[in-house]
Image 1: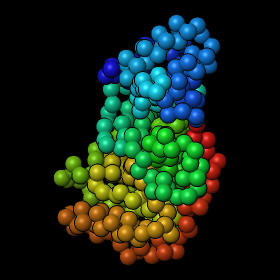
Image 2: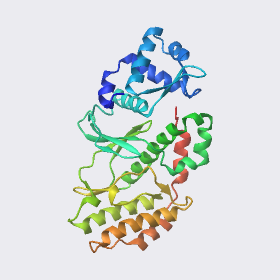
Image 3: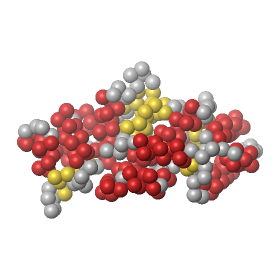
Length: 306
């Protein structure tokens, strides 16, 4: 397996990418797509297809199954390649950093550029953290594809994050600008700064005001961050709230617990610096807000996951 996703991507041929896409389509029916069908569907000579399969397997983009038949399954890295390729073909991203700028248990993030030279963060989701994975519209939509549950959940997380970012950004909240998404990848504006938890000095009143502004916008839209802490706030020229895939809508089961935890987390942090967070005011905003869950479930129904 090659360690650099970007380096491996640039070493793949047009044929390799077509074979990978053929296998992705084959997952509609199979967890491990039969090798015989791959060679038939790829429209290349059998020897050429098998050569591509060997190379994709070597790079770690495919996983093999030998019994009861020889078949192939795309790995998380394989989906990374397909998403990256689509973003490049669509001219959404033209450059990407050779190594990640951030690695977590739920995502891997690279820096990149758009054709206009705009610096972006390219976030590859790794875990299905969206609360909506438990909702019936999503579960019924993917019921035929139980063998791809992990794939669908990462795609749902990306869709959920893009939805929340788009609404909060358009509402005037301080979040990374959402640009596009593909499969399990979200492309957003790059935020220069440092995580709040790393700061020991600064204008904490100004930082808190920015965070309160963003929370107010989100809550009026019916969106609870769900994992807010000093680790998810980037402080630069302004202070931005990041990482939204686990958001929950007002009215969702136990949403009050998520909201109270978010508010307690930041209130406790800012209290160290003699800055008060208007918790009661934000709770009142939430009680008077709309429920955005239904709107997002409509987005799920409109989305094709394969």
